[in-house]
Length: 219
Ligand code: UDP
Image (cartoon, rainbow, N blue to C red; front, side, top):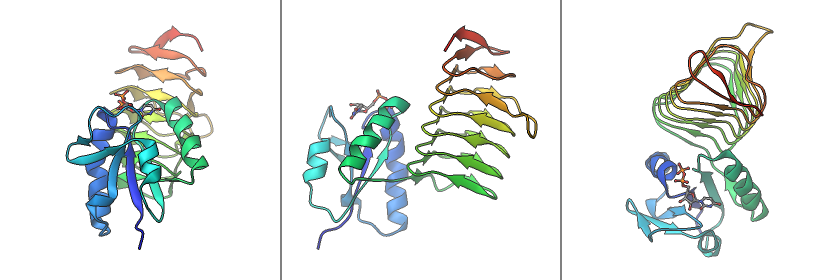
């Protein structure tokens, strides 16, 4: 009888961080480790950290009852492209979370998320598809986060903040709390540099850096 097959797409830095979480998640539900692989379009070797690396074609050709993929690539535009590719081949989105993630009340999160160790999502939060929250990031109360948003490690996203689709928030950035009905807004596709302290809205497509964060590039 055919079994489901699971993959971490991307066998580089991000993927190697996600693989142990994926392995542990499958172990918790009793799925054999042989059913978990890396997928990479430009594989550097056939095994990475003990796990087989397949090309996407090889992944599709491996007999399976169903295929699940978590997209472990930090570049959100690449993620979006690969989502379309996987959907066309009936490969299902898979979400992977570390065992110690803290999720409080009324948190909605879309498909294909990666929640790394020590991530905390507090209460009354809505998050779109294919969110990445890297190590030690948090999202505080009453935030709304769009699709394909990426948090590098240690992002402090305080309460009442809206982050639009495809925004990238760099390591250790701090986003100032907004107000009820008057959120701080990080615009679509904006980039917040590492360590930035964001105290006002960031326009769509803009890049901001520093403390207090200032415009480096316009959108
Ligand atoms: N990759 C891929 N298909 C794509 C784009 C990227 O398989 O369409 C793979 C690429 O070969 C590499 C990984 O994804 O192994 C991305 O690694 P990178 O170091 O660029 O970024 P990160 O791991 O930090 O996301």
